[in-house]
Image (cartoon, rainbow, N blue to C red; front, side, top):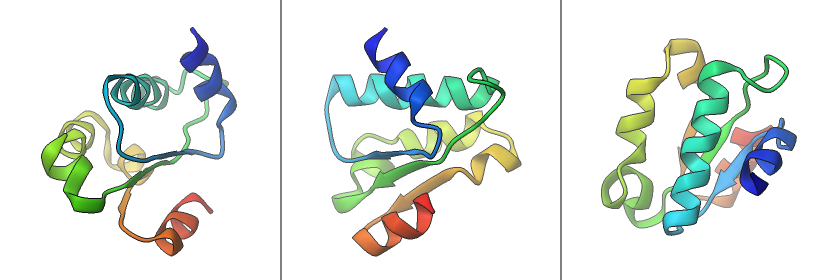
Length: 91
């Protein structure tokens, strides 16, 4: 419930760094909110700091999320490796 509430408030987007089970839970809760536009009909960016291919290889959420979203929603996904890229993606 706590994560769902926090994600509902994060309408400008969420930045994900490497994490474990709790982080993965938040990723998929956010993905569900975006997929169904369940928070006031809005969708928000999901920015993954993909150092050492954390999100694209070791925990391959990239492939799963790209398969879940349609083309318009997929544009909310950002896999980046620098702080500057994080800022660009979230703005």
